[in-house]
Image (tube, one colour):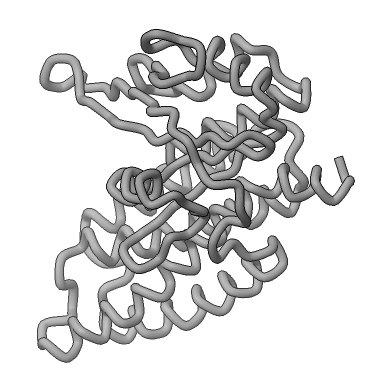
Length: 263
């Protein structure tokens, strides 16, 4: 969860393109990131897969005024509005982008390519029909910020008591990498045009995501009894849910602000 979702990159930079604060070529490069290539299939009017620049331009011509993110999980269709076919694809991928102003959505399918030691992602985005309806369970930025602060405090207390947060070489490496990225300014948290509060909420969500990743990747840590492991899971599940809600709120902030007339 610490890593930036591909749907977040596409939505954020797609919104920067719509806002006119980033060029099409820059947007395509930013969305691809460290992947090998991104293509989009199912774009209306196109017989086969096309590049990101053409796909985003076509979606804008079809009426898209913004891009929202969905980060669903089993039992939690966060950011989705249907139909069931699209929701199922998004749930399988654990992420999706939903167009605002046009009844289309994009779901990524990732393939690993390249030799051992230099494996990269090759992404095919599937453009599918969506239902034009309010997305499920997306909080405001203010709500997300409050929820995150409370969840981080509560989870830190529980996980520290169980000795599973921040112990071991895997945890230390993850924390060191995160600190280096933050202190070195390694990449923009969001694309240009987003309100500062959205950047702040996403940064906090990433910190919470680090805590979750460390706790899961660190094995059982000090939680050696069944009851302690159950307590850890109970502590992590609601925090993970809150962090996903906050990520969606941050990525969707540009669209929400625009619809309120603030942009």
